[in-house]
Length: 315
Image: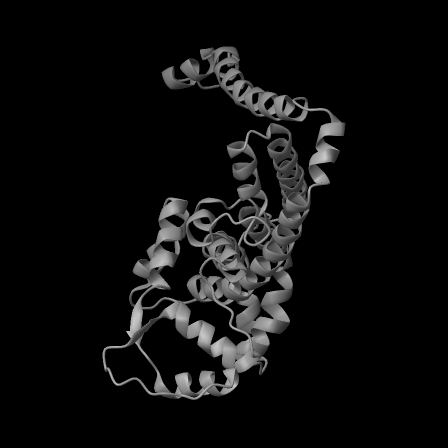
């Protein structure tokens, strides 16, 4: 029988040190942060009485803000999914020149301050472009007035003015974007869609390309392989992207304040309601609106955890 070597003796004699200090430090830091979140939410829920909250809900301004928030968030979520699915698929499955640059551009709405996004949108829709004569003529016909062409060649319209004229021709009613309800949806979309794109890209990264390749060899086109093979497997990521987009759009404030304004009963959503109620000293109304967003965020996060992304190795 051979004698154990020196290394083998050291291995047998080695005793791991206790992990108590390591876990004590990590658990203490984690517990402090969790306690801070719970204390923050507890303080808000116990600040006012249920009677004050119900009185705040009875205000037509807050009811309008709830209605507009739910409608705009739903529309934003649908638009975000329509955009994030093709972008996430292309970024996951294909390599092409400039992919790194495009990948960085897609992250800009995430890293930019929200106020900057709102300012960029505001400037974009105020860009001056030359007037379109045939559009002016059609607007005049819709309005029932005589069209008088402009003698000056320097006449310009903003992008928002052009949109108002187009909607006047199509719907018979002028509908703008800036400081109107569409601006609320667009401001929410610009931020929420970026999170949905990231989620869908991770989703398609986790779905192995082998399934798709087998479908292609069996005679499917690329579109058929996507809709019949890849897309059904992405339902968890689709649900996670939708819930995250909805939650992010519900809490959007900065871009809406700059691009849409905070007009009562017009472009007022729940975050701007909190701001407006605080400015007039109505703490109960601000707390009531914020509690709605807290409850909605909890529900959305639970859904995302239950049905969201799961780890899986690509095949």
